[in-house]
Image 1 (tube, rainbow, N blue to C red):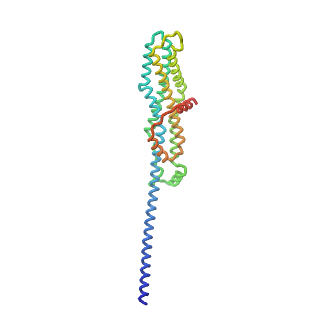
Image 2: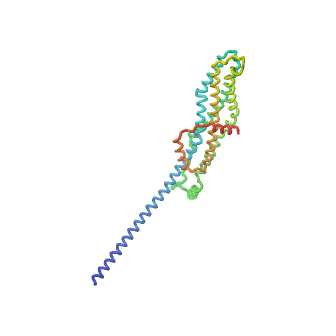
Image 3: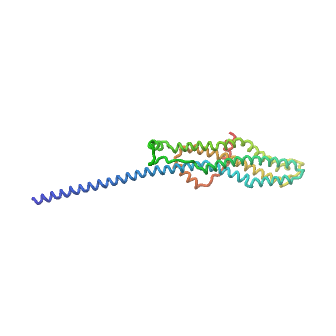
Length: 307
């Protein structure tokens, strides 16, 4: 009996020792798990803050490019058509046709001369405006959106880092403030070009319209008037080129205006957009073909000019 009691006591002692060991091991395991989770959570916070800072810089760069690139594209397209040889070839053809007209076609000569003068005048003004827009847009794209410090740094966070972080989560914080400032600066940068466009709009559109009208008068002169000399084919061919060139000049002028107007509108509407959303949209847009200006866009541009 005594041996049985001793055996029981020994078993209880072993069980208690095992439980103590198990408890110690469990505690260590829990502590290890807690440290792992805490470390991962801390790393996640740091990762989120750093990634956000990177997204914010990329978003500001994307906003600047989205604003200035359409302005630059429209201006460069205008310069290519007007002074890269396309319209210069039209000038040469019309001048040659005028020089080859006999004296009996004096009225046709006068119509062609006036139509050519108006086209050249419109082209010159549109070209000068395109050069100004190209210079501004190129400079802004080259310089980028400017410096943008990280929102938070664990090394030099400062006394107000918690307030800044909370403000950033609630209402956009420093990024939204920086973006709003950039939007305002871009409007100020493009304003001189828009004022210049407004000043020349009336004369450019009038010259384009009358150049086209006078050219049509040349093409139908000997058809609708009895007893007049037949208009040489070289003159009618030149008139057709003038009609097409006048239409191109008008289209480029309105496209440039529309590009600026759309950039301003999109910039203002995107002031509340999250940085990561801007970056994602920019990546998706880069995979899509370039936008083509439609007739409705040009009509909107004309309304903006006149209003």
